Amino acid sequence: MAFKEEIRDLFARGHERYLRNVSVDCIIFGFHDSALKVLLLKANYADGWALPGGFIGREEGMDEAAIRVLQQRTHLGDIYLQQFRVFGQSGRPTQKMNHEKLKTLGIKSEGSWMFDRFITIGYYALVDFNKVNPTPDEFSIACEWFNVYELPPMMMDHADLIADALSFLRHQLNYRPIGNNLLPEKFTMPELQKLYETILGRKLDRRNFQRKILGVGILKRLEERKPGVAHKAPYYYKFDLRKYQKALEAGMGFQIQ
Image 1 (cartoon, rainbow, N blue to C red):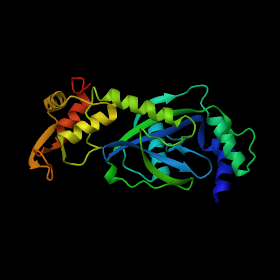
Image 2: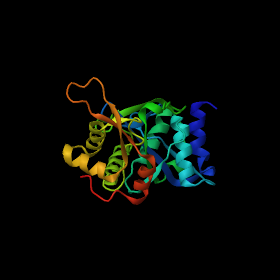
Image 3: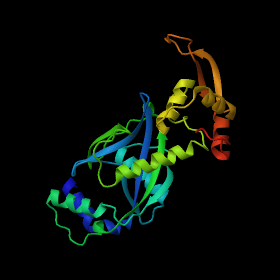
Image 4: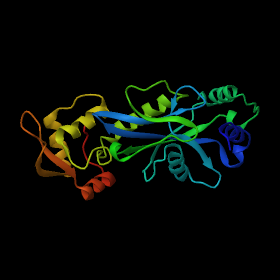
């Protein structure tokens, strides 16, 4: 089915396959070149960039839908997605954008379910930037990473969804460890601190950070030092995955901030 016919069919009969008024959007974070990045799609039918998102099948669970949508939109699989918020503001600009989509494509579909008010379920994930290879689907012309603090022009309210996901991630830093899915297998203490600082958007005291993070017991120091460092070369560390998982479940018991 050609792209235009697919869009026409979605607007006209999509409600037969999907739940009305509800969708899922996925915020995928990666860490690369000392920057926290988010994965975005560029639609081939509208201006602006968007989060990978879609609809929930009538016989499908929300979590199942989020996993399927992410795979279909970006071809990323085996990603653990965590639900973090429901977005249901009355003024969400979904209807206006959908009207503009059809106008651009020259499609008339008055009374479509796509013009209803939509509530979206927000999911987020932390992935190893170097181990994923996202590619766009047939509805997109590009699938790219952007610095979370330097977003391009965004569709609808997706910039707000990203800001809320970042706020949620910052809050999680006080209770749960991060880094296992964002850093390489071995890393230095300055690299781990840089990750936390990038997410928080501010500097942390080096000694205080190191004391707290080592006190949790989730790190193993290796005998290997990082080469090519002008001053005293820092040791490499890796996560103790058993203790890391325990800290995820029980919390770390201190505030990193």
